[in-house]
Image (cartoon, rainbow over all chains, first blue to last red; front, side, top):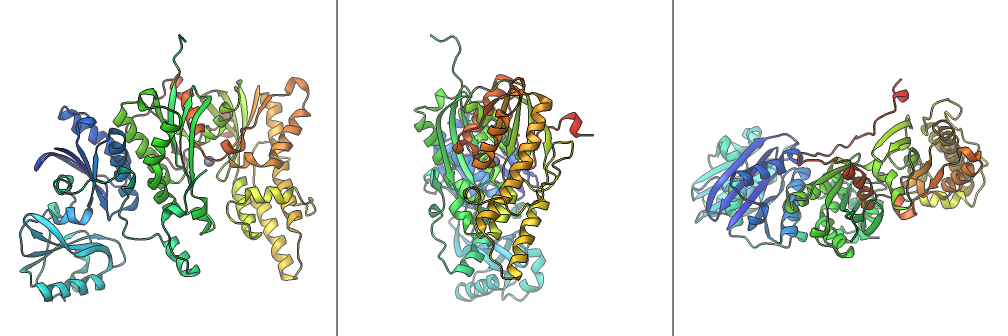
Length: 246
Length: 349
Ligand SMILES: [Zn+2]
């Protein structure tokens, strides 16, 4: 099965082509806020070099979130249209699971996170089992204190041998991390980046979804909605309540 | 068999709070038009919240692509090009239509055409009647108030624009003061028809010899009048307030536009944009043009009310003209939230 995977979740753009378990090619570039300009040409280049057409791809995979909201939407919109038009499969993969997948040792609690500013993180924790990162602290939007409480609880209950922080922003929290009950280390630069090749690998074992229903996993309501909810007490309701064809 | 092949364009528009797709034949005929509006959502906040708008766009984009093809009884094989608004507008919102259109272009191999949203608004006229060039357009919406000279179907120049607020923006702001929910234009227009111009609000820059507008002074005068009345517990007639505001807006727009028509002598006069749906403005412009000397009277095209608001059919219409000129975009096409039509040389002085 040929899988084309992309990540536009962070300021790194990553595109990869996998054939089943095997990575054929992965291209990464750091392009601050220019994913819209670079994504399609990179896909085109990878396909051309491998003498493939988009219709030769069996499954599309994308980092579904968390991450930059605008970035996520560029990637998700792109694969959703590919899959919808070409009648192919599409799979969304957690950005944090993809980060955690860069570490393969067992018995290590891997905390994957993306800096969400003001001591907040989009984060989740994973444990490797048979080469698959299994989610043990759910992906969410956490203040560092809340995240560390959850990590300490996990350490107490499950006694993993090692603790690893991977992704972005944790190096700014050393004072806080030093209070943890287990010595920790940080991921390498390579591990801290999101790799589309790993997204492709994880996508192999996931159920495809209806492209029309594929949406970013923002993990956070917009501030406007939160304020409105607080002010009015009205429930958020499904988004479909607010969009109508006229 | 017809020697000239029909050209069908599938177009996307997602620059603000409407997600729209359309199939347009030969730039003139709407074969399908799907508009998913988010107004209900943004009414919760009293105006468009960009992040919320972007989230809604992505929810419907692939679905309404299929709907546009189905309603036109078409498959991708019947389509000749894919068009999309790339600016101006909300960047996050634009990026949904843009990412979708580019992905569709890659998946189908069809050429891509990036369209200026304002050119689209003006080209809604082409879906109503044939435009004879040169033409002059009064383009009025929430973000823009411009007089545009159309030299031919793809070369447009701004000859006058607003120095501050757009007319539609002023409507929304005074609407808030009157307690009218966003978007306020339609209600103010209705109230204006039930009231009289009793407040004599200022008509800014009306006698200046350029074609520029300014609506912030009018907006402030309106708000001050309401605040003052509030302080002395005086109840003002909302219909008269609406009528007085609208009269000031329409006076300035009509006065400057008629002067531009006299100078540029266009063969067609067009109105475009959301405020072009304002009945007070439509009636006034038609009446003023009917009063011109016969040799100065252009053909008038006022698009149907549905085509004044944001929609993908107008993008398909404009894209057809670009298609004929071979003006295609490549996969690096990016959103340009502050895209502007070029200014006429005399504007740059
Ligand atoms: Zn518009």
